[in-house]
Image (tube, rainbow, N blue to C red; front, side, top):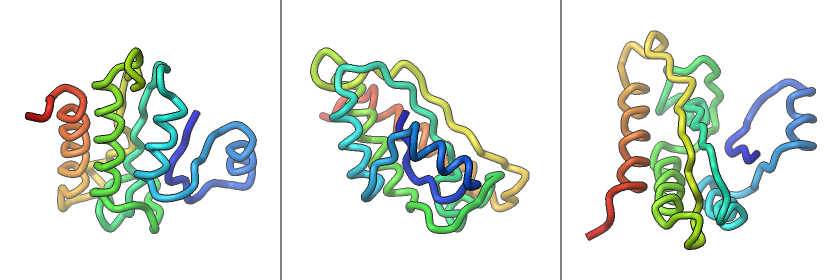
Length: 134
């Protein structure tokens, strides 16, 4: 299990995470690339928890926590995941077996910004995975 962008939790959650979860340091994009190298050849299930983002960019989430990465940094990390999946596990990439996007709460964002960000995340990941560069 890898987790990126964890910024809060109670004492027990944080202690459990330190013992049981890989939480790479550094930028989201850099940490994702390092994790993808470690996971080369493996099956990967990806969960994108939208509250990883700074709530200024995606306020419609049940657990807003200031200090998260910007949308563009998350998109760059997800594009790296998509490219690794496009390469395939047999060629040094990953076998992306599933994806979900959670913590999108439209009722908490009357502006609709969070829903737009969520749709863009799904779109960019799909493009990176299935659309080849010309």
